Length: 193
Image 1: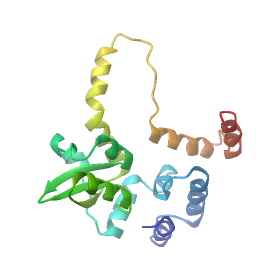
Image 2: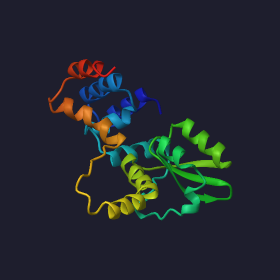
Image 3: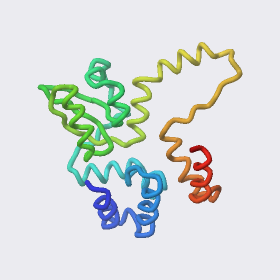
């Protein structure tokens, strides 16, 4: 589904107003990224509602990642770097077909890369970006974070790390709250070049 098409479909379904779509497209021009993600970050539609909408439009099933146990052997079929790069999670494999949970069913680059690497056919199931991020974190980082937490239990000088998703959400939030304008941000970022 093309970006403009997504916006028009959301308008037609009364899930988005003209003003909201214009604001999301303007923000996309400045920051880049996917229109659906921007619409969610702006709070115009929830991540789950967008996932349901896209699944209905594309006639795809929704993967309930909160109730799904994903075997480690299945995850090993796709390299961690590819899973993180495309925000996809392998959820099932049978008869040479790998089921892949993803939030963007039109990300053909991701589908083709997984098909090539896993050497099998890929079927897509929809999942919200938030659920995918949580599962990926649990698969690759939860046990490492727990080990590090136990190791650092006595250390009082801890730093807070901001992940990429939080960083991308921060700028629109600061602008929306009136803390900074895009013009001020552009000037400030020029100082770092």
